[in-house]
Length: 203
Image 1 (tube, one colour):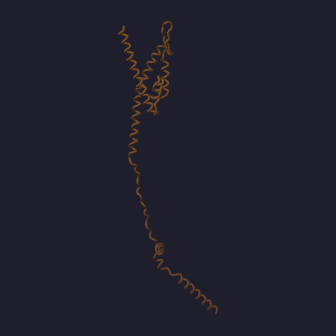
Image 2: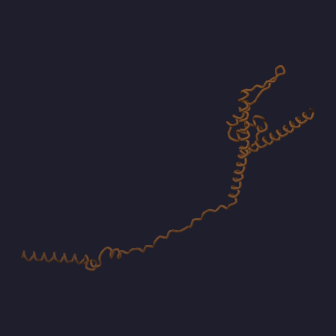
Image 3: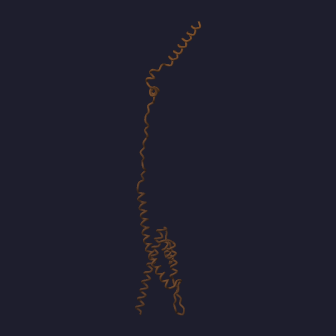
């Protein structure tokens, strides 16, 4: 009887130490994940029930966290003793409560695994961004140089009036044209001759 009692006490003590280790590791992990996502630690990771809410919030969103908290209260039981008889009572019936508690335990384990994967992905992305920033800052900045070209205007020689005349009028017309003064003299001579003829007729 004493050996059986000692075995049970040792088993309970071992289970308690194991539960404390898991609880501490769980709280440290939630603190690291919260710091990675929000750049700060939170005391909620060390408080029971609040750490369950924090797990759902960090892994998925706040709604999942509240669902986990509600499941904690739905699966909880209270023990009352009446005349030496212990009775357990809860919000849900015993059959449904056992199913909900099993689903709740599986969901917590799955969310914890997902949170671990998410933590390492975020950490990897953050390290990649830091390395990218270092590489970019070490590269020298080069400003593109555009070739400067001065537009060359074609040189134009001035055109003389003689060239304009030679281009616009044929050479034959220029050579056969008479000066204006000779035309005037001829018209004057014709008029004088006409006047002499008229005077002769009158006389």
